[in-house]
Amino acid sequence: MIKQTKSTRYKGFLPNFKIANFMEGRIMRRDDLLYPPNLIDTYIKKGLFIEHEAILVTRSLLKNHYSCNRCLNTDQAKFIHYQCAKCQQICTYCRHCITMGRVASCSQLLTWNGPSSRRQIKHQLNWTSTLTELQVKASQELTDSIMQKRSHLLHAVCGSGKTEILFLPIYKALQQNLRVCIATPRTDVVLELAPRLRKVLPATTIHALYGGAPEQQGYPQLVITTTHQLYRFSNTFDVMIVDEADAFPYTFDVPLQKAVVKAKKLDAPIAFVTATPSPQLLKQRQGYSFIPKRYHNYPLPVPRFQPLWRYKQQFKKGKLPKQLQLWVEQCIANQQPFLIFFPTIEMLEQALSLFSQNILSVHAEDPMRKEKVLQLRHAEISGLLTTTILERGITIANLQVAVVGTESAIFTASALIQIAGRVGRSQQCPVGDIVFFHHGISLEMDGAKEEIERLNEVAYGQGSTKLFTM
Image (cartoon, rainbow, N blue to C red; front, side, top):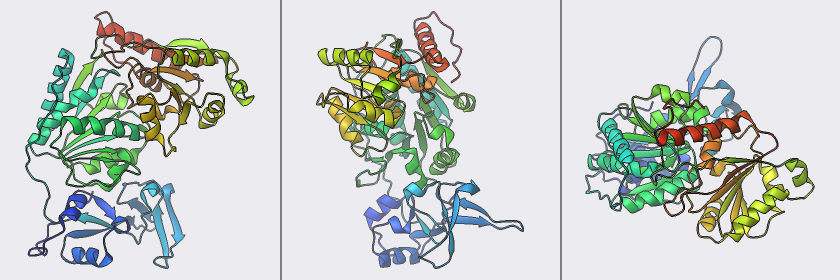
C-alpha cells in the first residue's frame, strides 16, 4: 500500500489546479503524464509529487522476490527480466499490468502530495420515479451499511432496478463529501451507467474511466471505472461499489481484487452488486439485501431449449442453420432488436457472413463496440452477433436473445442467467424470447433454467429462499 507523507515545501508555490484535479488519489507512471519534464521535476522538488519504486525487490540468500507497486502482483512467473535500453541494465517488469503501460525496475511511479481539490458542493438528485417496496428496503439497507462503513452485498435479479437502488446511497455519500467509486469488470457496464448517473446527479462531476476513454475535466467526486483502471488509484475512495462483482475476469483475478482494496481508503466499505453472487461473495458479506423479482413485477423470462444439430459443421460449410435463420427472420419481421451469443470469435465471424448487411458483430477487441451497441439501441441495425462480452450491462427495450452452442463450456450457469436477464427489462416490453440453441443439453443449461424458475417462485411466494450456488 502506498503511504503519503504530507510536505510543507510547496507552501508559497501555487500548483496547477488541473494537475491537482487529475492526480489526487492516483498512482501514475511518470511517462504517462503529459506535462513538461521540467515541470514534473519542479513538482517533485516542491514535494507535490512523491516518487515510488515501480518494482519492489525482497532479497534473500536463495533468490529475489518481486512485487509490483502498481497492481500489487506477486506472481513471480509474471515478472520478466530484460536488457533495458533506457537504463542500460538488466531490468524487471510486471507482465500482469502490461496493458496499462510497462512498469519496470527503472520506472517512476508518482502520487499527489499537494493540497486537496475536494470541495463541499451542493449535490442534486434529479430523479422522481417511484421505487418498489423491495427496492426501497434494499436502498435503505445499503445506505445504512455505507454510513456505518460496513461491507454489503446487494443480490438482486437481472432487471430488478439495481442502478436505481444505488441512486440514494450514492447521493447520501456525496452529501457527506465522500468520494465514491463504482467499479466493474466490464467496459459496457461503465458505458451504460455513466450517462444515467450524470442525468440524475447533474451537479456532480463524474468521470467514466476505461481503456480509450476521452480526457475529462474537473475533480471527480464520483468515478465510474473498469476494475483494471483501479491499478492507477491508491488510498482514494471513501466508498467502493463493485458492480457485477462475479464477472470475469475480476472473480478469478487476485490482483484485480487487490486493486479494489488498494484504491479505497483503509476503513472504506465495499458494496458488492450482482444478480449471480459467487459462494465467496456470499460468505464475505456483512450487510445483505435480496430482491427476487423485477421492478415491473413480471416474471423473469425462462429460457427455452432448441436443438441445433451439427451447427459447427454447417457454419464451416457456409450454411446458416434453418432454426436459427427462422428465429432471426421472425425478429426482423416483428421489428424486434436481437442479440445472438456465440461461444467463440471464430464461429461468430463464420456466422456473420451468412446474415444480412443490417446485422453486425461485436467482441471484446472490437474498437467500434460502443458505437455498434448504440446503433442497435437506436434501431439503426436489426441485431448484433456477440460473444459473452455483452452478457451484462446492456438494457434495450423489446430485446430478443438467442445463444448458439449453449452447451459450450464458456456458457456457465451464471453467464446464462445474465444473458437471459437481457430480455424483458422494460416496463413497456416486460416479456420476450430467450432461446438456448444447442447440440446437447448441459448441466449448466439445466442449472440456469432451474435457478430462473426458482427465483420466479420465490418472487411470488411459492419457492424456497435457499441461495443457488454458481
